[in-house]
Image (cartoon, rainbow, N blue to C red):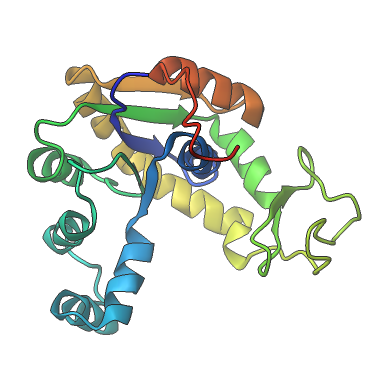
Length: 223
């Protein structure tokens, strides 16, 4: 297998990009970059950057693009590993910053998980989670064996507050306001792959691996 590209995943919340990222982490040695997780970890470390981030958040402000970029640079050495950037970039400015400051000289691919928004609403409103085990179910496509109970831990499943239709449609509106210009940016750079995310998880995975030409599996890692 040739050198793996650095990956940028674009897609609306619930489009399945997180599920596919987990598969690539497990089977191809990628590291999944979540800016939210990095922010929390940096604050927990008590570093000067973490304290600066904490101050911004405590003041009720969004963390600015340059601070997030600084955090990414401190945690993502692209010369030593392969990363999936999921959740950043969210805007064209962030895409340009990431490209210029962190991914310059890297082989990259951007994957857009494109999904019909009504399918997305149905998918997320039927999502149920098990907080302790981390398992995620869908009442339509991937229900638990026993209604309302996690197959792994036996704990009650939860319908998250932000999985209601009103919240989802608001998040979709935010996503729609920025996605077109980001798609065009990556299309112009000739690094964009578009995946149909309306279908089953296994078919999405098949199409993703084909699009990225990831035909082998890292044998040092379990399936």
